[in-house]
Length: 210
Length: 271
Image (tube, rainbow over all chains, first blue to last red):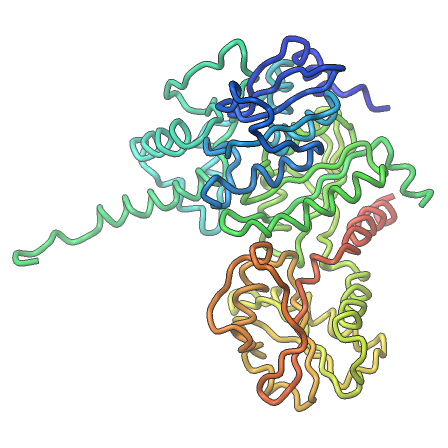
């Protein structure tokens, strides 16, 4: 038999002390056990100023493109568009919506809460790559740190637990957005950085007059 | 269906490629997952992707069930199904047991026998009123000179379609980057009606942008399918023929049945 969902029971418990934030999403308790989601920067706006949605699956159309209409393949990118609110029936629908806004975030939070989260060192992630990404493992330590700073600390709301670079600890009003292992976006960029580093090392010095 | 009723304590993991550039790439996998979720066959249904979130390697965390059926929503056997997915999921073979959990790794959807039936019905829906004896059905794939396996899945489908005796004047395979080239479609058949069905999972860069250019019905790559207001107007009269162009086979809602068939087949084979 399946035990009652641990993720759902944790979320239900957390909803009792709402409002809280997950990334750029603000989760607040409404009346009659309902739950309201909106962009955290829209917290002070009147509901009437926001477009209302009543199905958690609408999160997909909200999260798919940024305000400029650009595709958001990495949902941790801090460019979630504003101007919407979701009026949901309770924890189950809230879970569906949050799983779309930040895939696996609740599952990783539950794993961390239960001390089951395994943090995978960057070297291990890069070492197991094959095919065109095999080359990513040759990135220099400095290149990897710089990429982590740019891609993860500045370009993503998730907290890279596998990096020793300091990242802000989640506040008491936040469910942490955890990253236990460098993602495929990082690996793809690590390959590009590694290639650039290699080319810089092997490029002939510019000759006079170039 | 009694067989499927036994899955009520199990979970389904659908594995897709996803894309950092094309918003339509993961859509069929997500839609199939939602459809199967609604059917209530499994306790949990989740997706994981190579190029989107959640990634393959963290998919373990998504589940609370002890038994997981992992089905690659890929069109053929190859690098991803044999190397990347097993590596990222830490699989040891068809069945992996660890930490009190069992993961069953099923075959990719594209190689299931029922894909043939799906291709046949897609072709019939595409052009229901044309005389089939005067029509060529072309199944188009990527093809690459680097891997002989890349065309095998499509050749198998063409043979199976032939065996169904559908009455088409010709049933052919063609490829983007390998002979017979889809760009030469009018050289591959003399028949007046030509039906082209892309053997891909998603309406992605290949099926929606590259192949239409190779067919000659677009002059330059166009926007992603979901960002265009209309699908193609069939038929297109070009190169002296009537050409019908289909969406990718993986976008067919019946793919949901093929996914369940793969789980069923795994259970039959590995019982």
